[in-house]
Structures are given as structure tokens and as C-alpha cells.
Length: 134
Image (cartoon, rainbow, N blue to C red):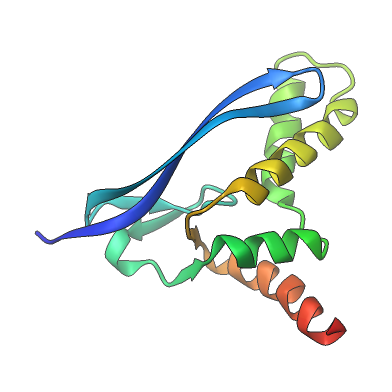
């Protein structure tokens, strides 16, 4: 079994009147088993083992895609469904706050993002928008 070093970050957040507030971000290198399970950093789909992850994007690339209009549709839908299940009568009122909070987390992210095939394809469309506009 091989061990690999991967950059990781831990965010301490709280829910405020304006959405999520990031209180603290800790960066570190972590020792991880190359066979450790990994999920997509956007939609949480299982990706298999760390050594088999096919798509890794820099935090800057994700930020560019979001600034060019990318929205994590699956994550937003899952959040809306969760709010409905918890009895929220008007979940749409919270979705803009959820999205703005997620964008704030993206802007502060300093570690690479592991992506599934679908999220990688979605992100590429918004990255290419930038190069077409330059």
C-alpha cells in the first residue's frame, strides 16, 4: 500500500443572516492512502480510489468557471430537496443564499478539486468561455 501527500483544507463555517460565513481556513498536506475512497468535490459522486481519479482541477480553474456562470446544479437540487424534506415551505427563497455561500467557499479554496466525468465536462464549458472572450 502506497501513501501519497495531498493538499487538504478544512473550513470552519457558520450560518449567518447572509448565508454561510467562513470563520477559518486551515491548509495542510495530508498523508493519504492511494486506495482511499474519493468523491467528486462538486456533486459528491464516488470516484473510486485516490490513485484512479482522472480529473483534478486547480482551485483557480474552478473559480474561473464559477465567475463565467457555472452553477453546481446537482448540489443545488439536492439542497432544495433536503429543505423540502425538512418541511421548508419556500425553499426557493434560500437557494440564492446557498449558491452565494458556495461561491464564497470556491473563491477561498486553495486545494485542487477532484471531479467526476460529468462535472469535469460541465466545468470545461465555462473555462472555454473565458478563453473565447480573451
